[in-house]
Length: 415
Ligand SMILES: [Zn+2]
Image 1: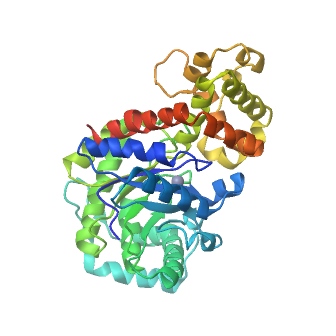
Image 2 (image 1 turned 180 degrees about the horizontal axis):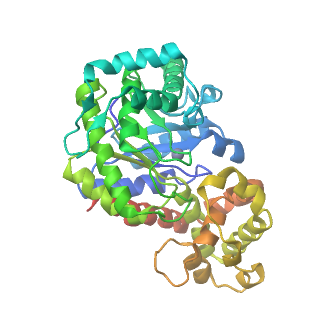
Image 3 (image 1 turned 180 degrees about the vertical axis):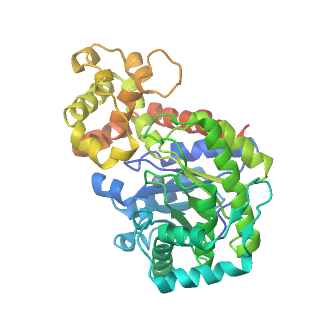
C-alpha cells in the first residue's frame, strides 16, 4: 500500500467532523496539492470517549462516500501496542507501533553481538551526504545504540508480525513511533533505529521520532527552532541514506505528531521537504476538537453555555484531566481565567481566547491547553453534546475546515 508523498493525519474525538476535515483536503487538491487523508485515533482516546475503532472507520468511509473522494485514504490505529492492537485490526489499515516505553530496556549479550555484526559491513564510520559529521561505529557507540533502541525496535517487529499474520503483508501502512518520551532522538539515534528496523525486516513507511523542544498539546512549538530545523533536515538525510543502503521502503518519510498546532516550525518543515523533494506525514486530531468547542461558542448562546460549562468543569477537574498528558502540557494555572469572568464573555471573546491565532490579544494558550485535555467532559455530556454538534454542524464544520486548510495545510505544503 502506498501512502502518498504528502499525508495528513486528522480525526476528532467524537467522529463527527470527518466531512469537514476531508473538505479541507479537497480544497488543497483543487490547488494542485495531493494530500492523503488519514483518520487517526489512539487507544487512549477511544477509552476516554468510550468509542470503538469501528466508529473511526465509519466516519472515514462516510466522509469519503458523501464527498466523492476517489483517492486513497486510511484509518490509523494510533499509538498501539501488542496489548491493545487486536481491537483495531479489522478496522484500521495504518498502524502506529508505539514502542517508546521499551527504549532503554537492556538487550541480551547475544542480541548486542548480532547487532554489532550486522553493522560490520558499514566499516568504522558512516558519512551521510549533506551531514558534516561522520557517524563513528565504534564498539562503544554501537553498544550504546543497542542499549537504547534494540529492544524497542524488536518489540515493533513483534507487533508488526502480529498484524501481518492477520492482514497480510502489503495490506497496511506501518509507522513506528517513539515520540512520547522526554529525551529527544538525534539524527544519529535515527540512523541506528533505522538500521535495527531494517534488520527486523519491518517495512516501515513513516517514522515518528521525539524531536528536541516541547510539543505541548494544542499550542505552538516551544524550543529552539534553529536546532529543530537542523535536526529535521538531518533526519530527512538519514532516512534518504537508510532507504538507499538498508533496503527500507522507498516512500519512507518522517511523521510529525504535532500535538495540534506547531505553526512556528511548519515553515522550516515545508522548506526542507521541498529542498530535498521528500514526503511528510503530519498528525493532528486535537485541533479539530478545539474547533468544535470554538464552533459551539460562536454558533449560539446555547452553544456558548456548553462551551463555558466544558471550561468550568475542566478547571475544577484539571488535575485528573491533565494527568495522562503530564509530559505534553504546560499550563500556568495563574493564567487560567476565573469562571465568573468567562460567564460574562461574549461568543467572540470566548472564541478569540481559544482559537490559535498567534499574536491575537485575546488568545490564551493556557486556556487552550486545558480545553484540549478536557474532551472527557464533553464525552460525559453524552447525547446532549452530540446533538448540539449536529444542530450547529454547519458553523462547526466551517471552523474545522478553515482551521485545517488555512492554518495547517497552507503552512505545511505552501500553496
Ligand atoms: Zn504521538
